[in-house]
Length: 301
Ligand SMILES: [Zn+2]
Image 1 (cartoon, rainbow, N blue to C red):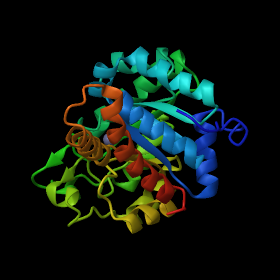
Image 2: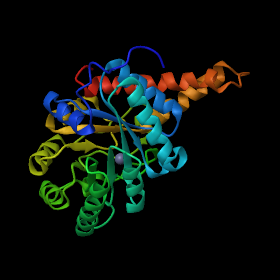
Image 3: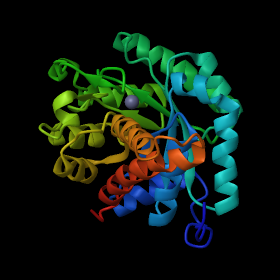
Image 4: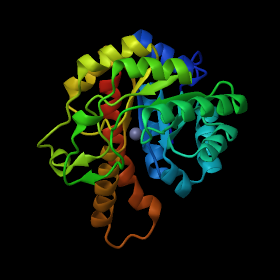
């Protein structure tokens, strides 16, 4: 990686909380991008560094199992220390408390503790207990809770679920945040994980319930995360940020770019066996997607 670091410009941005506070003041959103290898990590970091905006690296339980929990923590920390850039690490969709505790111990900046598949009352109870345990391990850890149904799997789906059934109720959002003491809330507002084939082909887009976002924001009063942002109409994303969304997750669009970039590299260099001569095609393809999303999230696109 080459070029200038970010130490001077972002010296004030020491923590994810600082970055979130600044995003709220600027009416921008922090881009959250899932990674499961060095290609994706390099692409996200380079895009954030070049555009001089904070980025969050997300790793789900499955992605962590592949990359290694301590290993991704060390990689992100080393990038932050060497370059002085605001790059933060999130334990995405963590369903087990043991896995959340492990992420807290190795220094993750935030954890999505996801019990949204449980009935509301149990979700409240288990999330509240997890917040107490995790803050005792790492007091400055930010914990995100989730209510409503946004589906699972950042993959390409054949059919759309009925999103209307699982939309988050603003009054439940208020109660959930007040009782559990989560720092961040992930609501269901028309978003869903994964993309449909028609979205990958660019024929259809996701649309968000903007009025509901604003109502949830007023009721909950905490930063809000939009999960499953891939394939969403750009204008809906702009309105969602104006309505109170502070973090936007993009995963499936990156996975599509990763595969296309890799295929391009293999096709252009059919006899090549040196990974670092093939993989840059994948880095470039992912980086283009990350840059386009970061520009939009930061009011520059
Ligand atoms: Zn998610």
